[in-house]
Image (tube, rainbow, N blue to C red):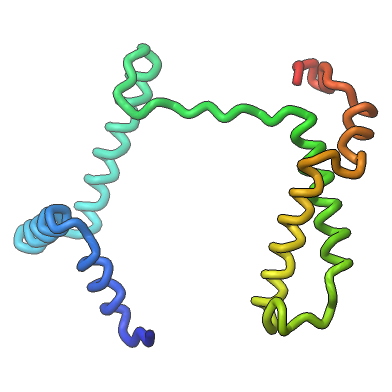
Length: 155
């Protein structure tokens, strides 16, 4: 597909948009155009409204009233998981060096072939490390037992 002018992209996005949202956006733009308001002044006013709304959300959050979506807590990976991922990376490097250099008929030519080859090595390394691995993760875990770190925090 050849895209000539930029307006094609804009029209494609507009066509893919929700019809209700499309009509609302068009109405807002028409209202701004017919009012003759300065674009920069309108943008500054909208930015001020957004800042006021975010300040109100911070105040609500501090008071314990939260109306937004629930906060997703991401747990810090345990040391065993970190060591396993490190072992997977080392195994990926080993596997990638063992794969044949001249394999254009299998992986493809140029950058795409290199990407496919790298992805294969990454998946093979992850699968090898998922089992018993080759012992790198075990050695690192035994050399660095889980306990308080340098800052005194546990984990």
